[in-house]
Length: 128
Image (tube, rainbow, N blue to C red; front, side):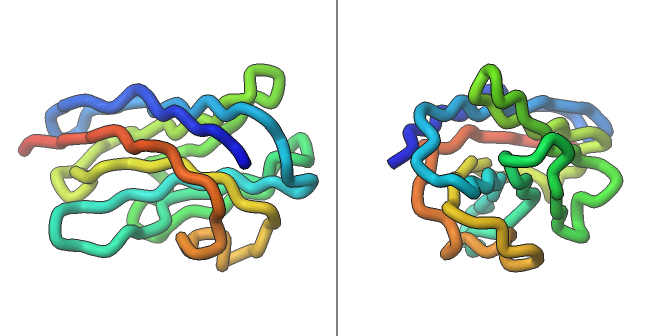
């Protein structure tokens, strides 16, 4: 099991930026993938971005709604995954969760059910 702690959420105006961090403890999965997800009130949890943590350069995958605006990265030495969010929009408002999964599944790496361990979430609010 992986323990995950998110930080970096907050309130910004549209067009602003935030960087979320997810510190994880342990690496129980040899092919561990880390993902960022979000859930807005009344909506289902959706995948935002994911990164394969074993190789130096990813791979990564992004939801169409955040491509070109969000960047996922990781620092294996610090056991931390980041989500840099630029050009934020009001529709990005949600609770953001990081999660750890045992494999890289390509496009399916944005599916919440592929992940086993979840953080407690951090609120992101974007005002217009």
